[in-house]
Image (cartoon, rainbow, N blue to C red; front, side, top):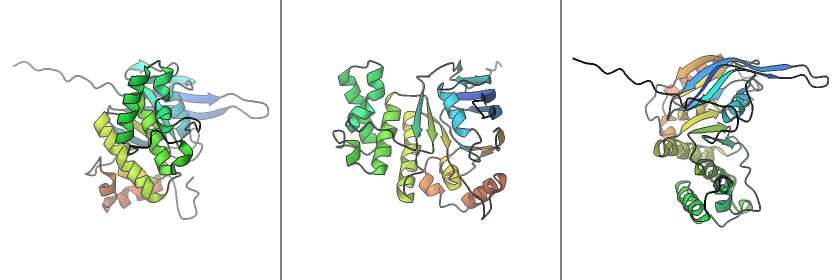
Length: 269
């Protein structure tokens, strides 16, 4: 009887022995922001990255997007070495960065416009994504006419419009009220399932990390490195509102607090 070897899954994004140094400037010494970072995220995974402020979390996202190059090691997206801005990766930040002089639809279409996609095709994409992101009917509105949560929905639509393989998300919901944040977490989880995306998600909200993630990576203090990878072994993986209600969430959060050495007197940011 013949057997067929399993075909290895190419990670959607991976870091292999990555260091990042920022050179000395003026009276400031050289900074080793991250060291020996090795991680791999499979296609379709949502992975949260947590750690103390200044440990290099955002630096990793910058290297993953190609906006910054590692000082040592290798970053790959879909098996290809990242050596500059990468069309397979999109960023979503805490600030929506919508252009106030453009309508919401025009903001969503901006990345496609830069790529030379015809106007009719751009409008088709933006219309579909505005429906998916619960902004149907707001395409002709301007950013100042929308609430904070609606603006972040528009930012999510803009992030998805270029059809990236990987979404790099740097605390995208941290400025929102608790209810809006949970709704957008739910939307993100559904979108990842529907669109087949991979997410690397920075957050300081430990409950958010547990509710949303398949896996949580914990970074050390600077120079940041991965000190633990935690599989979130809970049902309802793509239903964070339901998952949040499970008593096991508290145990995960307590373990993460211990890893981060947090107590009642700690500054979690």
